[in-house]
Amino acid sequence: MPMNRFHRHLCRSRMWARAIENELLPWALEDVRLGPDTLEIGPGYGATTRVLVRQVPHLSVVEIDAASVEGLRREFGDRAEVLHGDGAALPLPDTRFDSVACFTMLHHVPSPDRQDALFAEAYRVLRPGGEFVGCDALTGWGFRLVHLGDTCVPVPPDTLAGRLRTAGFADPEVTVGKGSFRFRARRPGPSEAGR
Image 1 (cartoon, rainbow, N blue to C red):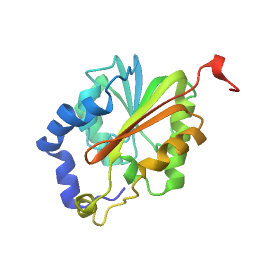
Image 2: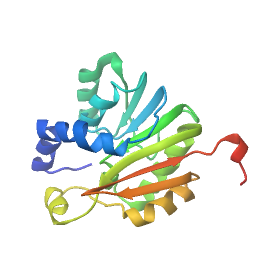
Image 3: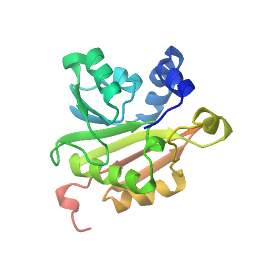
């Protein structure tokens, strides 16, 4: 997905990595139990992956940008399974993961339809009872300025719970914070089928 030079620099910066580790991920993952087998969709340059790889026994990541995939493979080696693929068409089997996560990347998915396909894929690869979690930015003038020339399709947080329900998720929660929103939803377990 196209990103302007300033945006690429920002996403690779130590400042962004510190904000991810100390603020954004602790907030996005508050009270979330990821489980032993986690998938991260769209890690980009790996700021979120650096945190997740220390928190879960087995981490897989799927990234659409080939250059980023190579960088992730160099950095994480055998500590994470790094796959080249599209979050809206995951190259993974059904019901494999305890949790699926995506952080600050949904607005880079090029259309609401592709975002909805990503939600459906997250549901497909989750085990029953597994959680889909993440966060994304709220739109504003600063956000728009950073994304000039980028693929940028913000997700309206007030529509997200309904979109997650349509993908099959149960109990979606969306919380708006300062400059961003977080979400979590669950794939229903077998005893909940048909409710």
